Image 1 (tube, one colour):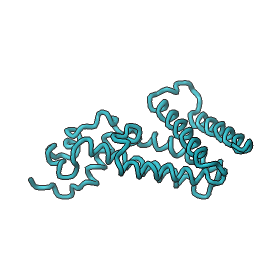
Image 2 (cartoon, helix red, strand yellow):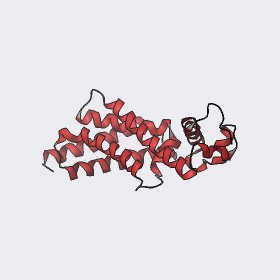
Image 3 (cartoon, one colour):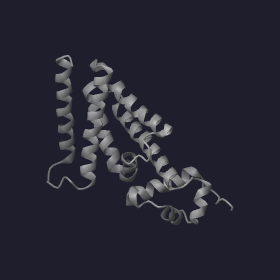
Length: 192
């Protein structure tokens, strides 16, 4: 079977990202992807191993891109300002790339070595932001877990139209993050 000129694994992945962002990750199928690329479905197997592999690649790309977005947001910032910027960047990523964000949320295999490595990179980045707070490793990991739960919860509720009041969602997010940071500062002051 001949491979279409100009079609490669990256082109396939980019098309899958577009479909996921437009229709949602659950609606992504190889047939829809093949149609978007104007090829026959079996031709996709020249570039991916199947739908589970594609979802894994989407998860991996999503993790890399959300980390990149947070890194860009925190440049020149430290401590509270950096954590606030990272939280806003995280939610912003979910807004701009909803299907790719869903791929992160629905990791196909938490034990996959590639996904574990990329996920650990995100955690490591957040731990570096937290280093100036002087937390123990365990406490810092709890803070990262709380941070992720908070921003993921906000992004998920927003994606599912859970905020229907006429309030500014960015302001709600900012207040949520600032409240979390005040709690973090209070714990640090108490020596926790």
